Image: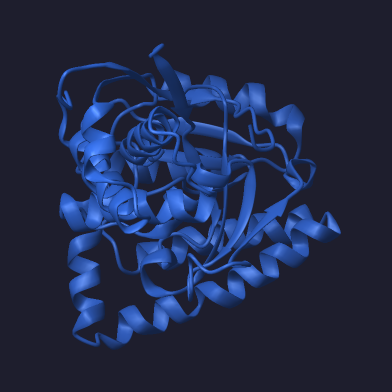
Length: 307
């Protein structure tokens, strides 16, 4: 059988993260400036030299069995999986889930077992949460499974109609800045707050309740072309997060750089990468220069519809 190559894109949260862990709502987008690529090639037995690849294979095999695929059919068409990625690591751009999504896509093609986006997203979440024990929510996996700009309802994240495609033309001018310095994994970031949530901590529950109406107002602002309101909500999204999560000094500095120059700023994910929403596109070159001058990398995201 000929080799198969698949890819998955990084994602940035526009509004709502981290409420995906708590049944909230969110808006996120994928962008095509970097990617995780997985290649499947013939092998006598499954050859999966990474935890993320093994986890993807585990949930795919379970899904295939539940779909009535004979175990012998999978074994007869074993493959080796290898990945390459240029998504910056541990900066909150969903680099690990991109590898899992790309691996599941490769396995689906290799074994001729299509995975609709909702199924693909749910399997990817199971791979990381159930198999690897990583704390995570559905936002990343839904965004990467569907691709483009998505509005998501996490009350029933994998139900039909829970994810709505939005026109990328609705987005304002955007910039992403990120830090190359080592950071904690997203699971480590989320665990303490999630434990407080499970114990009924009133502050955590109060903050989380604010995300759903914030995202709903953001959706209305996007459709109305009201970027001033959207910028206010982007800032509010981060300020809510900062009430619950410790913010690294370098992350705080990235937030401040944009705000000092009239832009709205928030985390793309769990920290390390910042979404910057300037008041006008003409401000982007200056913002990039300032971020780069303080040692941060930048990119203007190429947001497109689904592949």
